Amino acid sequence: MPNVIVFASYGLELAEVGGTLAAHAAAGDRVTASVLFSREQTRPSIRAAASHLGVEEVTFLHAVHGEIDGNEGRAVRDQLVTLIRRHRPVIALLPDPEHTIADLDPDRRPAAPLTLEAMALAARDWRTEELGPPCDTVPTLYYYFPTHPVITVDITATMTAKLAALGELDYQAAYSEQRLRASIGADGWAAVERLAGDGGLLAALETAHALHHGAGGHSGAAFAEAFRPGGTITVSRLP
Picture (cartoon, rainbow, N blue to C red):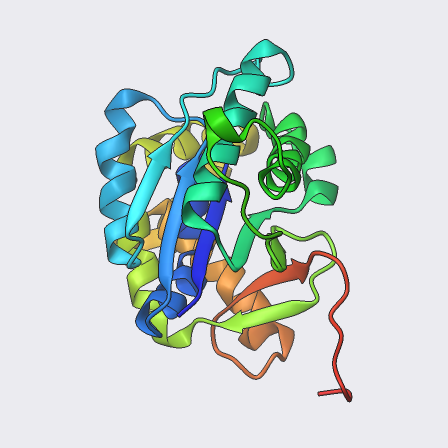
């Protein structure tokens, strides 16, 4: 029963890879999460979303927008080192560093390498009295939101849990609607709203993504989430 940890910049990301998290939880794996940026008032919604996915524990790291690449970033890195050493994950999911380079959400660019640095330091004999004994190097990394997907996870069986998690994130739905209205205009928004229907904007967007990587991508799955492995995968023969 491997420990699986997902590193998220924002709470929405837990639901965006929620089908995969729910599949691991259903298989008996222990699934935990950390969220870098969240307001106090949004945390109950994020925890509620995580509960639909079988995530056992969500840690909020209290990162400050615009400060993660300075002294504040080093403090967050140390929190991440402590977290990794405590959970000792076998599988880690984190945003694709290649994708974050061009991502226009703030703080994603420095957050990705900061998380990787924390994973590296967690496995070294470094500040063990303060941050706990070192753990083994996390053997398996997967990047989500990949620019070049390599692996898709069939989430057909856990799509309902993913949508239930998205339904808890009212604050994110309101923000996404505000940004989308500004970028596509009133007519564009009206068209999106008609297609989204009663399920809401987030459910419509994530269903579209899951169909794109699933049935729309000829993957053999109805709904899927895409990943890219960190590093190489060695096999005895091609699968």
